[in-house]
Length: 151
Image (cartoon, rainbow, N blue to C red; front, side, top):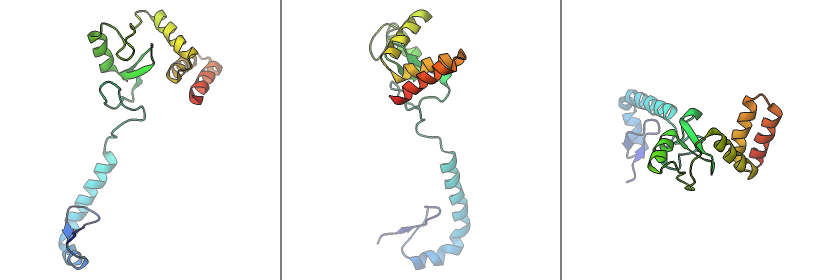
């Protein structure tokens, strides 16, 4: 016999519709409570991933706060800040993806980012768009964002 599950609370099974109707008065109150718990659980459940995806090193969801993630300028890979610091120490300041040395100065960092922009890398284009936006050069920012979106 295949048992039928209560549609609301999913915690009670019945052998037939008649059995379900007979038990309804005893089950009604507990069913309401459990159904509310299930609804709240579904409503307040943390997403398994963010729209940013997962960190390619630790496979945890990327934080929504951009201050808690970092981009490797050599290959434009975005990782969570924890993995960025750990890989910097363990790999003697080399990128864990392409093994290039990470830039030590801001000028080197900008130079690598511009190389990625010239290569039409969407992540680098977005970063450059943000920089231009912060400088209040909105037309350049719009061009960078548009180029990134087209890729």
